[in-house]
Length: 200
Image 1: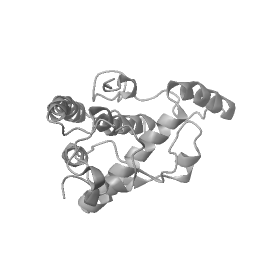
Image 2 (image 1 turned 180 degrees about the horizontal axis):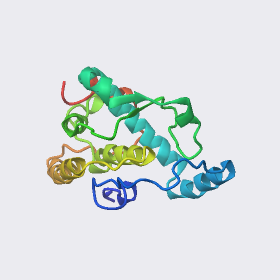
Image 3 (image 1 turned 90 degrees about the vertical axis):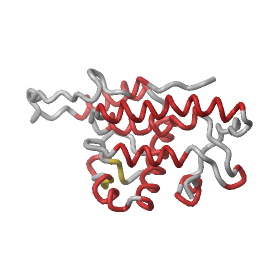
């Protein structure tokens, strides 16, 4: 079954148009019991395993950026604070860093997506299934929702267009026998480092 882009992770409202209105009572702290109650309610939207999967994909993206574009890593990746990691309303799994979602350089992400679609190792030259390809887009959307940041219109237009284009490309690769259809296994971290992508 072909997976579609997950609208659940898109920020509500117009794409890429964050609400800049001042928050009334922004200096008021929410009671601890209420924070826990909110976290329990919101936790039903997505399973813990899926959250962990999104966090793993984000870790892979960040590792790739550090090697391929270290200059961007210095401004596009940030260390999570102790307060963020301890927040019961957030879930970072084992990650200690995160992408900077506001002002994200879409060209860097397009480069990653272009590289990650081709497999190496014992499946050298095979193309990943569309369902695995879009997991990275969904992970970024999840991360942005955690950071309470509306992804830019540029991101939505270009990354989602890339996903739609790859969906068509995957059909052609399947017809040519070049698509790995057993691509639902857990994705290993090292497989996505630069030496493990189709760009090298």
